[in-house]
Amino acid sequence: MSIFTGKRIVLGISGGIAAYKAADLARQLGKAGADVHCVLTEGGAHFVTPITFQALTGNPAWTDAWDSRQSRNMAHIELTRGADLLLVAPATADVMAKLAHGMADDLLTTLALARECPLAVCPAMNRQMWENPATQRNLAQLRADGIAVFGPASGEQACGEVGMGRMLEPLEIVAEVAAFFTPKRLAGRKVLLTAGPTFEPLDPVRGITNISSGKMGFALARACADAGAEVTLVAGPVSQPTPRGVNRIDVQTALQMRNAVLANVMHADVFIGVAAVADYRPADAAEHKLKKTGSGGMTIELVQNPDILAEVAALPNPPFCIGFAAESQNLDEYAAAKRAKKRVPLLVGNLVQDGMGGDDNRVVLFDDAGRHELPQAPKDEVAQAIVAHFARMLA
Ligand code: PMT
Image (cartoon, rainbow, N blue to C red; front, top):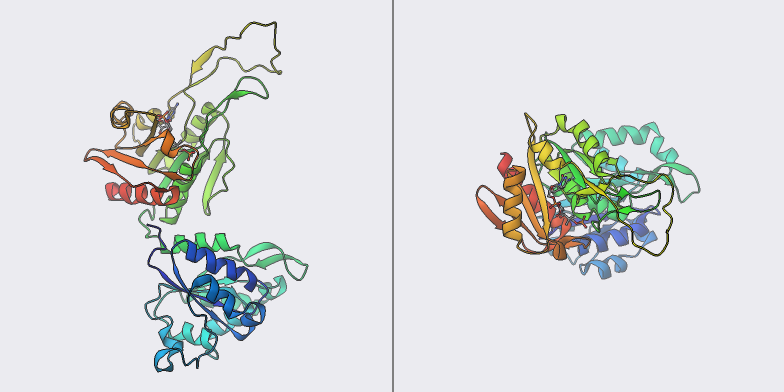
């Protein structure tokens, strides 16, 4: 189940050019599992028609406080009844000013004033409007009133200028909303993770690595950050975007990964080893590209890499350690043996054919209480379930 399943979101669209992105936002929120109901201001409806939002969400879109389709003509109250969030995206400078001052002169602002659910805004405006002291006063007031503010970002604007005021991209807003809905089970905790493969060089262009994509480790970093933790992620060579709010340290080799972990572990309450660390590295990395010599084979001498997880677990005051085990067979037997050998309270086992490289995973959690199998799901959902499990163990 996604964090959005069963969530009713009222999406308010006010009149800015970023309204065109709100159509994709409505679609992405629906795709994530939310039930989305759109309300457009008069300005918003100038940019994108209500029909577009109706088609994308499968729900009627609303523009008028006097719309007779709502029972008892109470659209200004009924639409947010039972809603989990009123999300205004884009939120223009004008709408932010109205919300900050409690004005209610159209359906959206009336809904905001009459709501019982939380309110979040995604500002979108020209950089001078954003920097204007009046907008900054309104922003401070919205924050003081407990209203969540997602963005804005800096970048090229529709007016051709460059600066602060661009609305976040739809998927960034979806990530913000997901974090908003996530219970803060790890508030006050510091989590250190490793993710991805390592790359052990043979020469300047070749090396030993594996097919870990980093997706599972990055999903866990994201889930920990969404749950309120301060997160440091030591990442091998992968092309995953850094999750919001996560401090990322990029490394190549197992030795670099170990050094980065040991430099940060003294602050950590939890250490999670998701990386597929190479157990061996070439004894010598050639300074120049190796040349083919004759027609015979080649022997590469390998030496063992340190076991980062086992080293962390053996520290005098270790953080709560979570290991992963990727096996191609006998998952229960091998994973339980790894948990005992590395002396970690929780070990997450997965089959390489289920979890390595792809978007989904199916894992089994091994701890003192026994085995706990999670259903196959997207890695973000698996990560949220793992966080819920170890947060209970920490508590
Ligand atoms: O990155 P993805 O494509 O999303 O794939 C995710 C994954 C399959 C890589 C991940 O879910 C996973 O299982 N990671 C562990 C991979 C593995 O095989 O680990 P291992 O059995 O070699 O090691 C066991 C544990 O010790 C792991 O926590 C590992 O990080 C750690 N370890 C291993 C060797 C070493 N030298 N140092 C370590 O810290």
